[in-house]
Image (cartoon, rainbow, N blue to C red; front, side, top):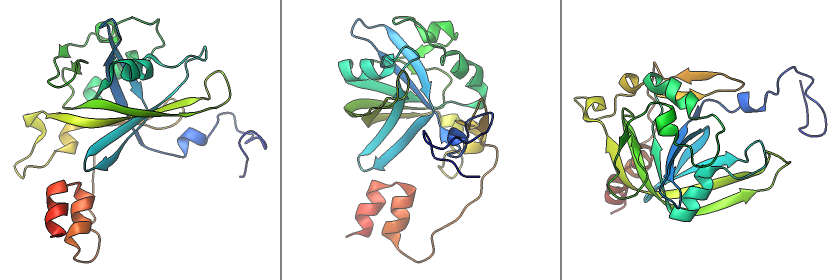
Length: 225
């Protein structure tokens, strides 16, 4: 098939676009507003941008009324946010926090989640989530789109503190992704769960390249000396 978004219709009963870019990590973002009220919401456009220094981003479309999401406004106003890893065990809570609610509603409480204090920023962390990044807001790129929801705010933040549950670190000192079972967004109403993995090492003997693949600043710098 062939179609041109906004020009030539796809002719399918459901739009296939989001199902073509899969799986997508979930940015389960916690923030506080200017009055100190907690907010928690998942975003399926989330990714790490670079590793030295570590920077992440999440992209938020407008809500159904055409307004900017609370997570975006809170991050910009307070200069902070936290990413919490979404897992199979927490899938129902992730879904509850995706509901569009009035400003000021505490999604932690609505989803029955316990809050953990952060060390470097004000937003709380999700108890039970095996990995969290505390982030300082850097900037926002705004992409205008078709109202009411088409416009998107892409928010970038520098990771200043990382929490990893000791229980998910294996004997080799590596994160046991199969124990964590992170979930990821597919298209339509579908999600997936990481329950298998395989390994590939880039050919050649470039220590710097392999350090970059691992995302290790120390090894990358040592390889360049």
